Amino acid sequence: MSNSTVPVVTEASYLTLHYRLASQAGDDIISTFKESPATLQFGMGQLAPFLEACLLGLPEGTHTTFELPPEQAFGPRNPELLQRVSRTTLRQNSQLGEEYRVGDLVEFAAPGGGQFAGVVREIDEQGALFDFNHPLAGQQVQFEVKIIGIL
Image 1 (cartoon, rainbow, N blue to C red):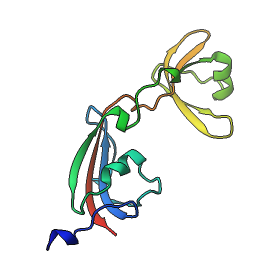
Image 2 (tube, helix red, strand yellow; image 1 turned 45 degrees about the horizontal axis):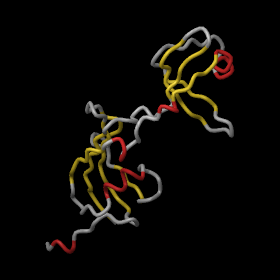
Image 3 (spheres, rainbow, N blue to C red; image 1 turned 180 degrees about the vertical axis):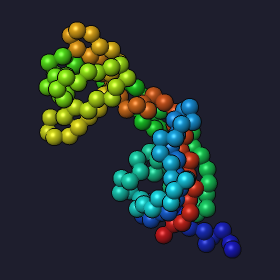
């Protein structure tokens, strides 16, 4: 089989692939390798744009791992996303009597109906300090991919 017949990933590709996203420490965040492969239409938001960018131009059959620095992954940590939340606001956003501990991930209703989540960094009588950065912000991530088929 000559190389010219091997399809490569383009912006219009429909792919079957295995992929794994792992933290700097090597812990799986998501992986399809132990299950059935994922099938996705490129550019439909099923994979983050920064992950799709890695796939462009790869030939069918490729099995490789990308090391993505924070700038190419979930971004650097943003100090402005560390925010104090008052006890009053916490009470309005929580179930009755819910107690928060450092390290808890808490979801808030956003104005306009969405949700956003923050991790409790510290707590005192006045309220809590939340980190609304993505848990993987500021971290290098590994993106392993095995392209099984391209349509």
